[in-house]
Image 1 (cartoon, rainbow, N blue to C red):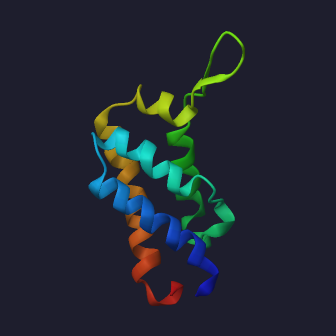
Image 2 (image 1 turned 180 degrees about the vertical axis):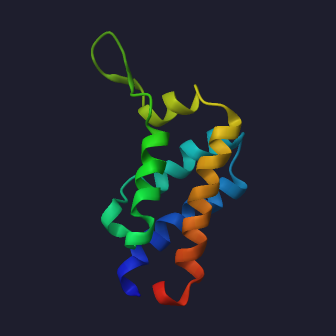
Length: 110
């Protein structure tokens, strides 16, 4: 269904980043986030909206760090990834790939 083309495109790029990017999964999640940060829950089928909300919450659990002038020194995703375990990063990445794979291969979303 053309309705999910935007999410499909963004998640495809994210999946490539997760598979081929540099660094451990936490570093690759920061890179992948840049490709899908504009996605909203409404961009997904109902079945994935709660999962997407969970992903975004996990990626931004720790807010940004500000410098002495009040400017963002380290974004919330980068800050969060520096504080979580690699195993937690794998869980987040797995959920992203599972959703992306289903959106890209399931006939009802094409």
